[in-house]
Amino acid sequence: MNTLSVSQLSTLRWDLESDVNAYAQRGFGGIGLYRPKVEDYGVERTIELLGEHSMVATSLSWGGGFTGSDGRPFEDAVSDAVSAVIQASQLRAGTLIVLAGGKNNHIKTHLRRTLCQALVRVAAVASEHGVKLALEPFHPGCGDEWSFVHDLQSTLDIIERVDNPSLGMVLDTYHIGMDRDALRWLPDVARHLHLVQLGDGRHCPHGEMNRCLLGDGCVPLPELIELLHENGYCGSWEVELIGEDVESISYDHLLDHTKRYLDHTLGQLC
Image (cartoon, rainbow, N blue to C red; front, side):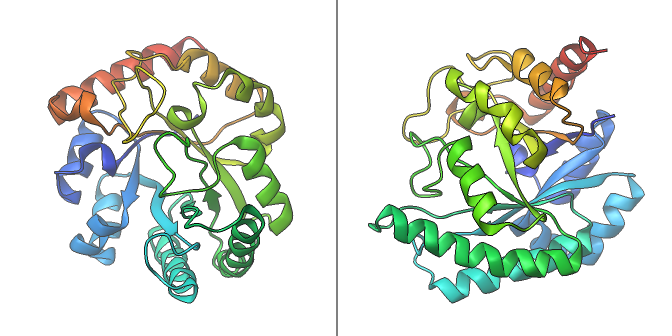
């Protein structure tokens, strides 16, 4: 059975202990960990807290930024990603999410070469520690500063170039699900999926990410979930809700709605 999980970015103002308690109370078996929250609480304490609630870390966010778009030198970004791999191993996280980094005025061939060089090194460490890496494509309308990798085809190309079984991808329905053409790529990428993040939005991303409650937007979530299920995806469903449309909604209501929606939607697959 797929683990139902919530990314800590969905309840950003809460601390880690509040997140774990609230998610567990509603029957979520997983949590998408956010590195700053883990570091504030402490890795060992986080491990103990998750164990007390029989909760698994479905992901750790994130490593990457290898193109220098965030101001860090290449070697610093690689070193940080290696540290994140070790942290993910300690936390027994299902996957470490990796963001490529923005364009930073580089040409496409240089960007791709830089990313692959970094991923070869980080994936080698991940293999040694039994950690899965998941490269996440971002919609160009809201993610240029985060990632120059925007679609499933480009992500698959990077994975094949690096050629390490520890490297796969994250499919976030908010970034990918509004593109009907992307659906035809799902059978090709299904075997590379380390994680599926569920997100919805009322319109195509433009500027900042602006997600809405699941089912309130234009992402065909039931269709995507069914298609992923039919193509053999048996990993976690991790919800990520961030943006203006959910800022005024209490976290308690957000979590209650999310659990009801998932129970209903996933129940249709049975």
